[in-house]
Length: 278
Image (cartoon, one colour):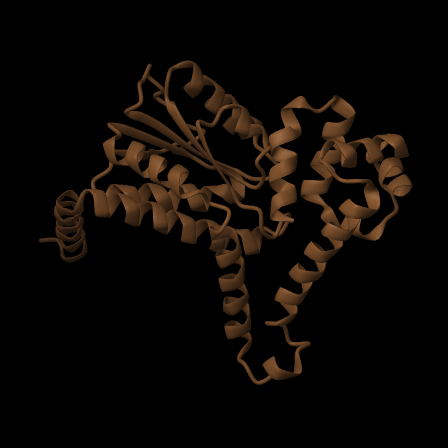
């Protein structure tokens, strides 16, 4: 199924408007394809059965049944991975519930990590290591991710700022030393996308962290990191994203060990002064 996701994303820009509707449904709700015949999938989208078939042929499948078989295997494996750490499994009833949930998060993180390209990751680390200014945006349930990453980058000496809707964005004209990090998960915030469009116009490097390779932020991102797992379930998405952010921060720290050390010492000194009124 990971290969299918990639096929859809590679082909997406060349698809017709109707075929893009089919592609979007497949990425967001694969169970619709696993459980229903082509005619019913078409009816749910307001397109013909022949368009569903044409979509399958466009991706290189012999027909709908071949694509459906691959989707069913994916859905089955997702369900099996979850049941390995659920209370319905007799072997796991002896495990504490918190352990079951955390083990399930581990499976999600491991699965998602395989979809992140090493070259793309290293490119992002390089941009962030050399950045003069980093602006980070995440609204609504994305805010906690943006807030954590801002603090983590500041703690290692990166000039990072958190975008707040009630304040000016301060998007001066930039260069490759100006990086805008965007968290954009379904349902996608229009304000975040407008901000990304303006950053793009002003020459900033844009790093997008999202839930699909064809999410709206993909139109602006220079580097895109899609989190494919647990679509629509924000509580399961968050542990994956936080783990990925930790990898980014750790990568920058390795590039600038002395800067990281000095910054952490300064932050600790500041924290002690604030705590004990020194």
